[in-house]
Amino acid sequence: MFATGTVHGLIAGSALNFGQNIALTAASTSLTYDALVQGVRRFSDGLLHLDVPKGHRVAIYLEKRIETVVACFGTSYAGCVFVPVNPLLKPQQVSHILKDCNVQVLVTSDERLDLLQSELRDCPDLRHVVVVGAQSSREQLDNVSCHPWDQVMSAAARQPHRVIDADMAAILYTSGSTGKPKGVVLSHRNLVAGAKSVASYLENKANDTLLAALPLSFDAGFSQLTTAFHAGARVVLLNYLLPRDVISALVREKVTGLTAVPPMWIQLSQLAWPETITEHLRYIANTGGRMPLETLRALRAALPKTRPFLMYGLTEAFRSTYLPPEEVERRPDSIGKAIPNAEILVLREDGAPCAPNEPGELVHRGALVGLGYWNDPEKTAEHFRPLPRQVSGLVLPEIAVFSGDTVRMDEHGFLYFIGRRDEMIKTSGYRVSPVEVEEVLYSTPCVGEAAAFGVPHPVLGQAIVAVITAKDGVPMDAGHALDQCRRRLPAYMIPAHLEVRTGPLPRNPNGKIDRKALASNFLNLFQNPTL
Image (tube, rainbow, N blue to C red; front, side, top):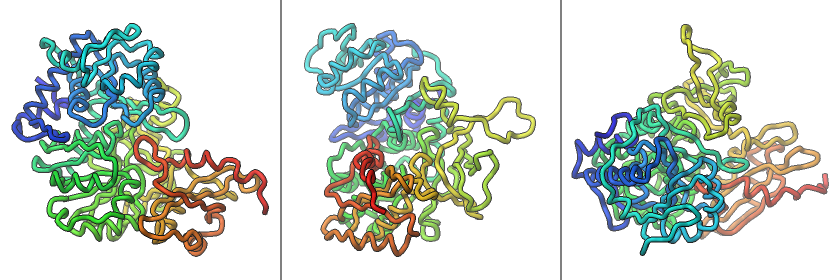
């Protein structure tokens, strides 16, 4: 019996009501809910046969495929903690994660194991590697035992460890704005509450088909699984190379819902969408940053019957806000209000509530607040803190997530994203959000992608640098882009340097434009400025 209130319980609940519905599709393979439940149980048996203790970490380093999902939810059923690793990461980055959270079992493919092999020697807690697609049994690797996937899936039944909704379920590694990624610890309660909340406002039902285009190591990517499994819907796993592949999959699989990050939407908005796609694509959703207004307009023009949901979230609390489609026309630059079962506060540095339209820090309270950062009490204490004003009579303090993001709330309660505290540009005594500069650049017809950031300047503190690319098929006019900035921005917000590049801008592992990586190329640009 799968325990209710647990991540794996989402699948079991839908199997009871929709057992013969397709739960998962990857390429030409599909599994019903009944078959997925059996796969999850079998993987759990295999883990327990390896004597993996309760709460120990199991890393899954695979592309999106059936085995990836079975391993994640099977780990949960066994009473262990799954750690989905972005398949785009390089061996050294994977090794960091394995060491950081003391992974005992790694699930990967034969090909990926070949690349990782030299790094595994530096992972002292690793005991077992489960190999998907192994042609033959591998020899032991420096005290690490290798097990073919099929062998693990044929183990005798074992009683799983007992888990409750407050137990750890997963560790998701954030890309981080500085330094190495940190692991956000999430409970079963966090993930289940998030699934129920998101599915409620997206109105997910058993007849939905969601396209999982984002990495499953990304909270919004994994959410495609949990929200669909809560509703009894189908998830299509997609490993795409080009934006055109996403549209092809939407048409081929008759997808009803697609969630993506702004860089993907920017690329998709520049493509031709089949007119028939709106007959089944019920909604699109944006997360992971503000969608440029020009991109939103292009998508709404191409998808007139499709409802757009603009969302904001952070890994530490899954999702936080959404803007209902009926508000998009009136407030296209808003991130909306709190999702169901959450409350969003905007606080000053002293903990007092901000006045309407006063910038402050976004603070999230409720069932989605995570358990902290793995093995990092200092960072945990910085972001997971007691609320400054408690409800009278409470004995224990309530822990909320202090996001580090600057937002404002208008007089009607709608929130507007200003910028991340650690990405704000400090120039000439002003604090400038890179998003404000990028929004103006995106309004220029020739600009495909844009990134603004601050770099050291001996007089200004930081100077604003912007990097842009040309929109497909449109000649670049950098002068026009800079003129737009001069017309629409105050002098201190105009980029001191504008550079045109070809091809897409660099991404971090979650698909967001990597401002930090771009800025590293310009650190010495203003060493000898002429003023």
